[in-house]
Length: 333
Image 1 (cartoon, helix red, strand yellow):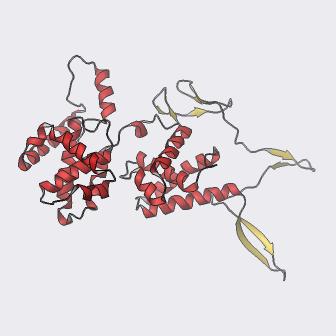
Image 2 (tube, helix red, strand yellow):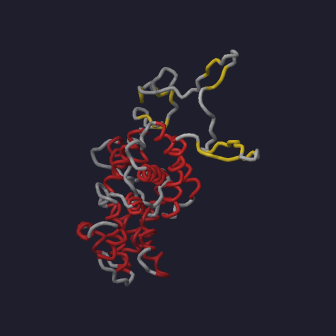
Image 3 (tube, one colour):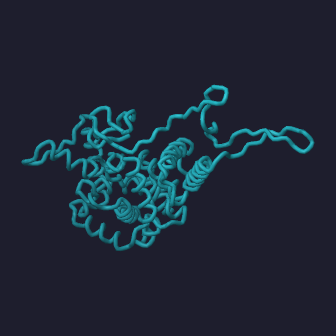
């Protein structure tokens, strides 16, 4: 569980009925119910566990006797709780297949563990199973930095993206992940470049266009264009410029159909990039700048510092700015 005070994943103690951080002692949750099994005494004085033991799959073996005396071994679900878990697993696997998420088994298993936590805390009541499953799978994709946006999941399940976003935020609040750095940190637009470029039919030049787009994203991050803006708009502007630099006359409406933003957003990002110094460079000059910039970033990464300072600012101020903008690293990460 993530502790806001310690800013890290910590081990919690629930012995006193509260979820308490073992590092700082902060109370993370004061509504904790015991999940320990309950034992009762039978008429003979022996102890017996209350309830039924059901495997993780939700299917328990049952022996039934037919009309002619034959014994048949069958598997049937025991209760609605296990049925809910099975439906969630099925929805997660179907979403992972339709979106071609890889590695499928690992991502789907991690998402189903989140779904189990949601079921245990009654998060699925009043909400559609598809939406909760999509929110769990999107959370894992954010954690593993997979190039999938929330609108991809909403298109897949045919749900309103804002409604699905509300379920996602409520799930983060339930699991106390809203302050986790993986969730709160801005998304790097470079994660989506290759996925979007693959949809635009650049043929054998796809990797060259994507490489130029990554350098354009790095340039935009260097000029603070990423801060406060959605990654899809940054990717759309970078791909539009990169396609024209390589001789592909793509129109803005072609970009809109791929990155799922309106044409006005693309125009705004292009207008902002036009005001930056790199917008005045030729294609060859920009490629040379990109190669030199990547070398500088690799050198700074090997030295373990950003290589930048702010006049009149302390180290803490610089760290806050780096955290806010997502870092100074280029778009190739």
